[in-house]
Each structure stands twice: as structure tokens, then as C-alpha cells.
Image (spheres, rainbow, N blue to C red):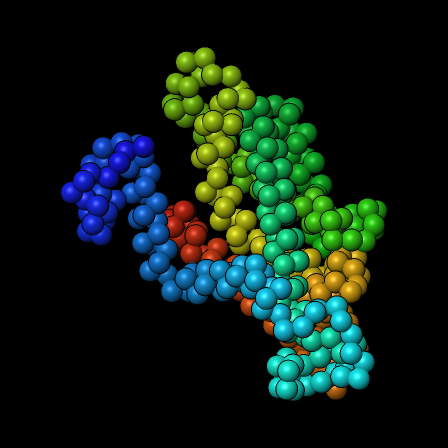
Length: 312
């Protein structure tokens, strides 16, 4: 790693080092590219708003035990269905007297847990299938892509319901079901990228140096597919959150008394006419987080894939 010269340790020196037109090392070139990407991203106001919302969500989830004014599981039937603005309960209480704000704060942990696991499992599975299919070609490509087409033929939520019905209700099974329905688009993207890359002079040179298929795929093709997958993952987060909330709403995701936002909406739908806030508050939370992921994804797409931004 190239150290910053002594005369460049000031703020202006850092900027000059990062914005240099003639980087002295690969590390400096990567740092300069990352810095330029951040500058481009920072100029997108909506993307910064989305990033701010998500950073706030992370902070709320991390500090949930200290931010929540009450235990999200403690019931107080004498204080049930209190409207927003009630002293001690700024967002009101649900049908069992539990503080909605506390349950909303703790529910952010469940949402992030589901999002993180699906974001790890589905893109990796899609990347593996897509790159192997694209690089191997022939009957391997045909079999893997036909399997992918079968998964794509079913609506995601319907397929997730089928998997959860087979696996059983529960948050872990919901994560597995959502991941099993989310990987095919990533496989398609990875395969398209691999078909473009595998015939390039760069890969031919690596192959002439004696690199085997596994090394070529993992060391040279995967890194070139990452940026497209990151953009797609970020844009898919809203759909993943909605799928998780849908499973929770139907009683197939996180189980009561877990403060999962979809389950909170299901519990509040019985009182939607007289006590609208019980279902509306978690619904607004889902809407806000989904919107934040979409705004962030649009910003990342403009930075990591400028051609898509120009086309849009």
C-alpha cells in the first residue's frame, strides 16, 4: 500500500493525492476511483437521503434496547389501543397495550436481519450459477439456465409461500424461502457479464498463463460482475422487505409475539377503521425503508454503471 507523502498529510494534500491524474500505484488508483465515485454519489441528493435513512435505521437497530421506551413484549390490557400522542406512548399502543414505538424500534432489527441474510445468500448463489453457466457453456449452460427459467416462471411471493409451506413457518425458513426465489435474476446478470468477459483478450491472456477455470472465474470474472450485482441487490431490497412483510402478514414469517412489521400490520388490520394507527405506523416504516433502498440503488447505479444512468 502506498503511503501518503509527508507534504500531503493535510486536507488539501489528501485531496490532491486522491485526485491525481497519474497515480503512483494500484492502491492509489483504487483509492482515487473510490473517492471519485463517492463525490459523484454525494452529488445525488435523493441518494444521500436514502443513505441517511438507512444509516438511521442501522443506528436505531443497534441502539434498540436503549432507544425503546418500553419492553416490546410487555402487555398492559388496561392501556390498550391508546391513540398517538398519548403521554408516554407517542405512537400509541396496540390491542394488547404494547407500545407501538418500542415494537417498531425492535422490529427494525428483524428487518435488517432478513435483509442481510438474503443479501448474502441470493447474490452469491446467483453469481455462482451465472458465472459457471456463462463460462462453461454447452449443456452445463443449458441445464442451469433452464432451472433458472423455472424459478423465474413463478411469481416470487407465490413461490416463497410454497417453500415456507414446505419448510414450516418461522423467520429462518422465511429467509431461506425468499433467498430461493431471489437468486435467478442475479444468475441472469452474472451469466450475461460472463459471456461478455470470457471472450476478451484479458481472459485469453490469463488462460495462456496457465490459469484454470476455477481461478479464472473466482479471480478474474467475479470481481468484474460485482458492481452490477451490488446495484441489483440494492434495488431488490425493497422487494425483499415487502416479501418478508407479506410472509409475516400471512403468519408464515416471524411468529407472534415477535415485533416484525408485517406481523404488526396483520395484528392491526382488525382495527383499521377505528384505530388506523396500529397498522398504519408499521406500514409507513416499511414504505420508508423500501423507498430509501430504492433511492440508494438509483444512486449506486449512476456511480457503478454510468451507462444505465444515461439510458434512464
